[in-house]
Length: 302
Image (cartoon, rainbow, N blue to C red):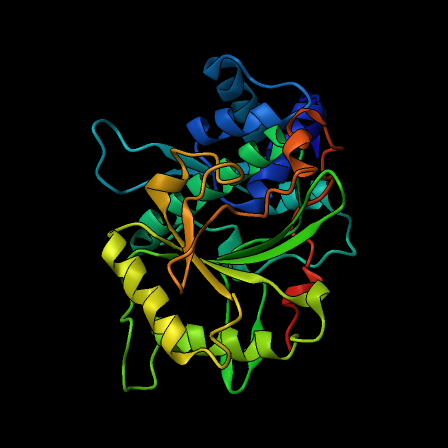
């Protein structure tokens, strides 16, 4: 507690902590995300100074990624238990221990890629006057249906300037799982069957329906195989449940204006429908969300 009193925590510090509650982030990712803060960082040195201050008072921890880069791998930052308690009162249960621990080496690429996607979507949404709400971090949502248990990489809801609500769960694919398998092991096929069974329960309730967003990082052909498989095994192929995109195409585009996603029928689409009304929304600023990691109603266990 003594350390906390030595450091004045300002609004941007709170927004840094809130961002790190969504997922681990590097300095460059936080710099980009700060465009959505009430006051953005324009100098990485100022951001690093605030990160050192938050680390000194025990609110955050950092480690270095272990994947190959042109130079030294970047550091990633995570909340500490004290940082989590600073954000939320005692009525919010602490996450599991691994939330606060160093990321295991085999998960580094996945975590970094997921953060790249999340930061890009939040930044582009903010520019379009779209709010990201009911955000749930990786593995914090459990979905049970028809004997399948699923833990999405994240889940969130988008709300446009006219109140339209669009629900998503994300599956980021680094080509580490089999697409098909006859064994009772983790595979893309099991995920598709589980999500499809879960969605089928909401066929009469649009407010609880969501899109499963498959994001691939290795090859477009793998994405095509995943979506083709979805079309084969869906209970109702006329419905749109699964949408996919290549990570590097998505983060080079505006997914709210460019058709960088496709469904199992091969139809191109933007992240959310762009109606005539919503095309005027990019200049309308929405209130910033005040809390992340709210359990999405559409993704609660069946």
